[in-house]
Amino acid sequence: MRKETWFVAVLVGAGLLLATMGALSSSPSNGEKSDFEGFDSLDEATVTENWKRYFPAQYEGWMRTSEMQETTYGGGGKAAAEDMDIEKINYLEMYPFLKVNYDGFPFSKGYYRSRGHYYALTDVVDTERLPDWEKRPATCIGCKTTDVSKLDAVHGDDWYSMPFSKVVGSNTIGCLDCHAAEDATVRHARDWLDEGMAHGTFANIEPEGRTDLVCAQCHTNYHFNAETRKVELPWTTGLTVEAQLEHYDAAQRSDEWVHPQTGALVAKIQHPEYELYHEGQEVNVHSMLGLQCTDCHMPKATDSDGEEYTEHHWTSPLTHVESTCMGCHSNWGSGGVIARAEGVQGRVYEKQNRIGRELAEFIEAVAEARSGETLDEVTLTRLQQIHREAQFYWDFIWVENSNGFHNWGEAHRVLDKAEALINEGMDVLDSV
Image 1 (cartoon, rainbow, N blue to C red):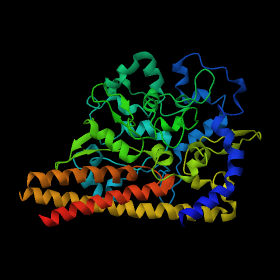
Image 2: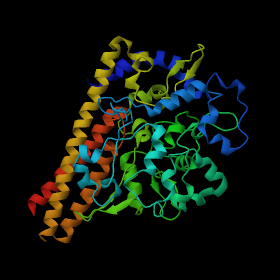
Image 3: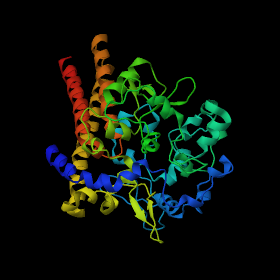
Image 4: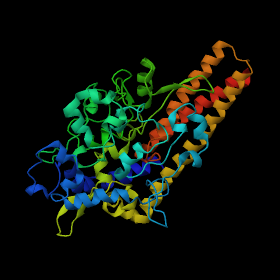
C-alpha cells in the first residue's frame, strides 16, 4: 500500500484513538493502586511477585510474557508441542549469512530470536556469546533485571565494572523497572537514558515526560563505556542512523571489532526500536500523531471485576488487534489489519535478508582479494570503510525487532543506503 494511503487511513481514525487511549500516555499506573502504600525496601520491591497482591491483573499479564504467540514475522518464539517449553529459535541456523557478517564477534557464536520479558535474565545468563562469567561484564544484566535499582543504590556506577558473577541474581525484568517502589508511578529506572537525553538531540519529538521512556531505557541502541563499562546511548549528535554512525566514528567503542575477513573496524548495533519509531529522517505517521509504544503494546483491558487496567502482556499488537489497531482501522477488519501490517513487514523482511546475504558475499569477496595481495592500501582502506558503513546501516534495521513496521519508510531508506554501498564496493573490486 502506498505511504499516502496509510497516512490518510491513520489520520482519519487518529482522533478516536487518541481520545480513548491518550490517557495512558500520562497516567501514572492504573485504577487498582488505591491500597498500595509502597514497599519498605528495594529488596522487597525487586521481587515482582510482591506486587501481585496490589496489582493482580497486571501481574498476570506480566506472567504471560512467558507464553509467546508466534506471528508471521516475529512474536518471540513458539510453544513446543511435547512439553510446552518455549523453544529458542536459532538465527544462526535460519540465516547462515550472519556467521559471516558477525565473524569475530560473539553474535557469531550464539544468536537467538528474542523471547518474552519473563526470560530476559535467563537468556543473558545462558548464552553462548560470553560463556566465561569472570570475563563477562556485569553491564550485561543492565536491561535484564529489577536488581539494577538496588545495584545503583548500593554501588553507584561502580557495579558496571564488577564481575558478572558478583551481581547476577534471580529477578528478571519486572514491575520495579518501570514503576517507583514508593507509589507505583511510571518512571524509568536507568539513568543512562537521562544522560542520553541530556544531549538534546531529539528532532521529531519532545521526550521529556513521555510514558514510553520506560521502553526507551532498554529498547534503544547502546554501547558500553570503554573505561567504566557503563551503558551509553550514542545520541551525542542525533538519533538517526547517520547521526549514530557519526558518534561511533568519533572514537573507537568497546563494542567494535576488527572483522577478521576484511580487516574493517565494525560496530555492533543493538535493537534501536525507539529511534526507528520516533526519530527517523522519514517521519513515522504513527509517532507524528502522538502514539507511544504503550498505545499498541499495552492497550486497556478489563479485569474480572469489570475494572479497567493497562495490559502488561508485552507482545506483538498483531496478537490482539481488536484492542489496538482497530481503534483507528475498524473499517479494515482484523484480518485486513493483519494483512496490511504483514505486507509492510514482509517487504522489509525480504529486503533485509537479501541485503544481509549481499553483505556476506561482499565480505567474502574482499577477503579473497586480500588473500591474493592484489589490493593497494588506498583501495583496501576504501573497501573497509564501505564494509563498516554498509554493515552499520544494514544491522540497524536487521536487529530492530519490528521488521520495519515501526517506521517502514525509514527502514527502506536505510536498507537502500546499505545496498548502494555494497554495490559500490563490488564495483571497486571489479575494477581491481
